[in-house]
Image (cartoon, rainbow, N blue to C red; front, side, top):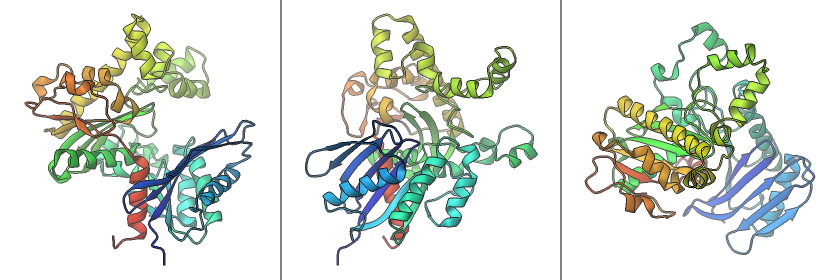
Length: 402
């Protein structure tokens, strides 16, 4: 009998489905792919098996059901179909778990209903996540399916940090509190950083900086999250590719009353036309750095604002933790943009935070230290792997003896 060690990880977006099939024996990818532009005339499926060349399929995918059926066909062509006896579970990324879901959870009708009740606090993400879950359950109703929540790792944040200073009854009625996001990344990276340092996570205090198009920071003490920058929504905190991050709440009223913008227009402004793209027209840090290097003033200002916010959070989280053993950079910008890492840590030697310029300049896909030998605080670059973290959590839940 074939041992079931494969986990299919699904990340369903509003018009896309990302997937990876991971073998939990060694964490290797048996296959990976993406269906994009679902519901549009120019739909595309890219499928990459572990052995063989990448395959591309161009066609209309009317909905997520058609998209996932096509994914199943591609996997079956590699003898890895959804009916494979080697498939142990399907792990679903779910962005918002509210206060109820603080751990990976086996999906049933009640769980789906609760994820649906959380749509008002995650209107852009939870509906698509639910569609992915429902389609996958219809395709394999007999297979354990596990929801892994972006918010779960941050559920340990103390009430003093999670509570907004607004009327408590209003906050409770509308579920207003700090939830935090990117939790699977922060959890994976904090453990991987401990391995890099050869230390037990329970011994370490670290600041983790997940810097991609979306960006967030967390303060992790003894392997437990005690503070995070994103809040009720993924809009709060660091400057991002298209999101403003922290801004005076009065900005909303000012733009509505004085500027005449509607609530939807302000929502669009802060989520899609702010951050780097709002400051200089580019949300790709590579372009921002290129333009700044050529003397472009708008790009330089965008970079400076981005780094200033980073440094504020590093300092604030140092105060929250009291002692910091490591500062860890991850995700697309964090892993690849050496100037961002250097600028974020510049002038922090009094806190024990320093970057070695030569080590920082090395490009590598491996976890590595970029701090000098004499640095009191380890500064590290650790590639994130959210899909592997989801697979691990899903597999552990269905194989609780492993």
